[in-house]
Amino acid sequence: RPKVTLHLDVAKTTLSPTSDSPGSPCAPGGLMRSKGLHQGVSVQHICGSFVEDVEAAASSPASPIYELEKLVAKWTVAALCPVDGQLGAAYVYSLEGDQRCAATHLLSYSSATALQDVADSLKQHCNEVGTSTDKAFIWLKTLCWNLHRHEITDPMEMKALTDERIRSIGHVLVLLSPWDDPDYFKRKW
Picture 1 (cartoon, rainbow, N blue to C red):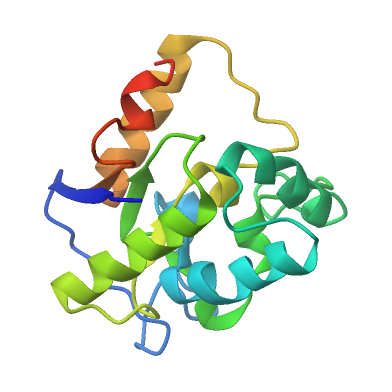
Picture 2 (cartoon, rainbow, N blue to C red):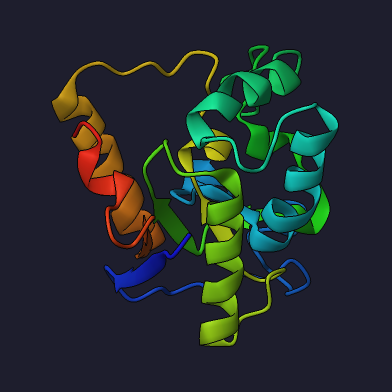
């Protein structure tokens, strides 16, 4: 399906994190969310291992993201959350090594978007801007939000959290799919 990814710079980024840099937020003892950084999942992981894991669980990469949230929550129900110390963590915290790091971009998308469209668009964006997929770390709700207990119904609280996250990360990718009738504009705000 035809799709487009728009890149919006919100603020200058002062970090250019890589997992092998000394003092990197990804390195052991490096900065994490407690210092204002939001963890993101590498594009390499999303396009590779995550899509493969979804297929192995008898789901399809053509499935809309919202259908995969239950699967992601099932995978992380027994994981200890490093933010609050309780069982049930965001998927991003189940990843080790160079598969997670301080987010370089926040992906804004419709939950009706297919996982494969997300993966293809992220890979295309990396190719277009000349970034390796193992150096781009994406914050997206399905993988970086703790699906076990963060149900927010107050729109003002959601706006405040989203605004803070966008300012902290500094770069937003907006996925419009399909291009001629984007699901993005049909979602509830």
